[in-house]
Length: 260
Image 1: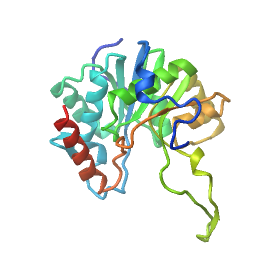
Image 2: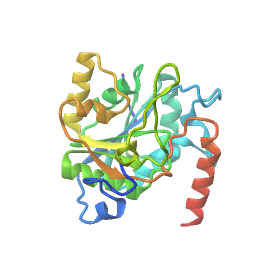
Image 3: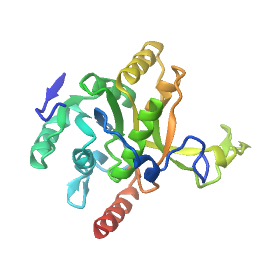
Image 4: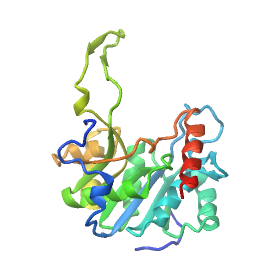
């Protein structure tokens, strides 16, 4: 059930063909009607803490609050739908008031899988364009988000990504290397991922009907035959997942604050 909060409604080491850099994409960026679905319903166990990773403190504030504040500041974002667990809705509502997160228009209960949570979040979004972002990626920059939005407006769908640095191996069930893909064509995909809302909603409905479960939103859109473009992001846009991620995020945030 929706829980209304009452806010405002409103690849290669060089850029691959079609991949937009943050600086280039900001040139001529036009403001559209964008809404954000922030996914924070997970109960990951890899962090090894009693508290869910999105609610752990990062420099005195919950990780999730840092994420929400970024989209609160961005003029291009008209509304935010926060998807979280039923037991966490009340404290999220409290934080929205405490930290002035007026763009959070709805707080909704997520599903059993991330993909289901995104589909549920889209139902509460009214903007023509939708971006989906992990609540545990608090260090994405406004420039990178803007690059992704601009690329999506050009092509219909876009994701943030960075070229893979390491050599990647395909390994069989016995732990034996089968092949080594060409690194120049491999990109590590991040969030946000940005789409026309109606098309993304259609893709999620099709995936549900087909029993398909993907690892990100671009996968469900790709199944419709739609091209999804890459906007080059930043390696500092880390996903806080394991214990070593939190001190690294603290370091990155401290460096960013010193540079202001």
